[in-house]
Structure formats: C-alpha cells, structure tokens
Image 1 (cartoon, rainbow, N blue to C red):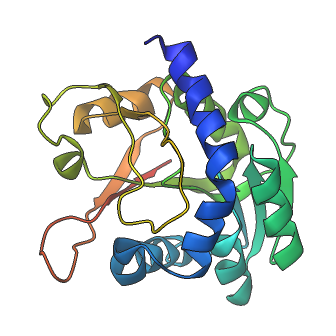
Image 2 (image 1 turned 180 degrees about the vertical axis):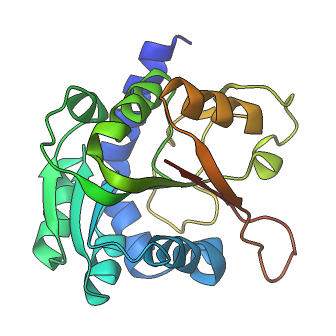
Length: 223
C-alpha cells in the first residue's frame, strides 16, 4: 500500500467513525485515557503556563474545554467536519476545519505558546509536512508537545522499524467500523522527524499505566 493511499484511508476511517469516537471520548470508555494519558497531556501543557494553545487534531474538543477551564485560550484544528461541529457546539475554544496540508500551507494565521498534538499524528508524509510548519506557529520560546503511542507498545509482533501498520479500535467500545492504518515510528524515527522539521527535542516523558507499570504513551517536547 502506498503512502498516499494509506493517508487517504486515515481520513476516510475517521470520517466514518467520528460519531463512535465522540461517544467513546464523552463516555470515557478508553481505560488508558481515563487512567493516565488525558491527565498527562493536560499537565504537560499547563506546565508551560501558556496564554494560548493550538490543538492540532483536536477531535471533539475535550482538551480545549479542559484547558479553557484553566484560563487558557485555545485554537483547535481538525479535518473531520462532524468533530469540528461537535467541538464548536460544546465551546471552549475557536475551532477550524483544516487539514494538515492546509496548516502546512500556512492557512492557520495564528501563533501560540504551545502547539499540542495528542494522539493525532497518524500519517507519514502528512505528519512530516505538518511538523515542518510548527515553528511558524510558535511564539518565541514556545514548544510543541506530542503525545503518541509509546514505541515499546506499538511494535506488537512486527519488527521494530518505521512503517505502516493496521489500526484497531480495541478498547474504544462499540459502534466502530473499519479502523485507520497508521504509520509506526521508532524512537529514532520520531527524533529524525523533529530534526528534519527544524525542531530540537527538549524532553521525553513516559506516563506509566498504574495497573501494568508499563508506558501508556510517550510525550515529546520540542522547540
């Protein structure tokens, strides 16, 4: 499968599964999010004491609403119309229907103290292009925060190398259709992607699942 076709399948799958995803987030069905990763990214963002945050791949806007409750101005971006509509209906920020290609083409004329991507970087070329645009979105001294599946947990039975993998909705509850593929990156793959985008890695955090003691995710901070 080519990168272009895989990238298209990501968008198709999210459009089809948007309502099921909104229910899963609203009902807090995903254990790792409920126990670890939601709070981890909120704390990571607030540790920077930002005035303004750009949430790339904001989904139905839960993170924006949480940060708004802490007095942070949030601009959210997503490519799925129904998710943007849901975010707008619940409030908590300013939300735009834009693709990562749009953002890479400088369609978002804003800057923020923190740009955050919370489990929203699933592609290959689209992500590389997006990361390259991040410096133009950051205020002086601003940082990018990326929370994603920990490479230790993402290998499964496959070899530890960058490449496309089949997706899964396991643990997300009922109502989902065909999952999206996603591009697995090793730790070295992520570091190379940041470096190619002109970003310097500042910190790596590995939130641990309280029941398994294993990393539930990894959070990269780059600037």
